Image (cartoon, rainbow, N blue to C red; front, side):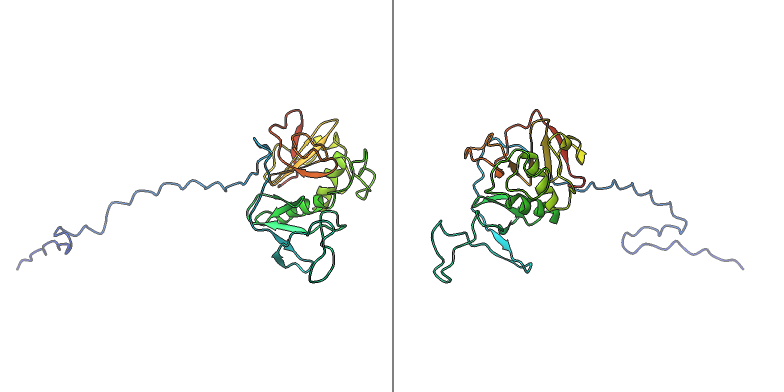
Length: 239
């Protein structure tokens, strides 16, 4: 008696023989390179001083609800519904304004904070708004965060304190070693022995009217400068 080996099975799809079970090992997968997270960085300089904005603006209410912002009426005008005067730039408590995106916008003399940034960045902007309309006072805001007027470093100190990023006011020289060196993602401080200012989400908070066509004095939101040369550059850690 003899036996006959079975013929190799044929693959139904190709007509070829089925590969033996002891197949060649598959090639090793190539290592996947880690994807670097996209880091947002707002500009700190601008070629032109144009800060015009015509997009939507919202306001955060005291109860934490975001509603459309209604611009204040001209000085001396009254609301036809309530008869009261609107809350404007000169009001004691400024409205907490918001705009879509990651860039702050200049709205009715105030800075509107971008919606898509960390809460601390919004708080810096809203704190800075509270100083609009106050005078420049040399040394103002140094002894205390509360002052009838502010100088350059007092203004920066107050804004950072509004986001709990500074516990004691600092002068311009002290800001040279504040936080971490270099440009921040959203907040950058420029300081030297004689002056300090900051940029936040694309706007500049400064008591100096340099490169600002309005030439208005005191703490204000202003256009970015074409250059920030001559200053030490730092930023709050993480921002």
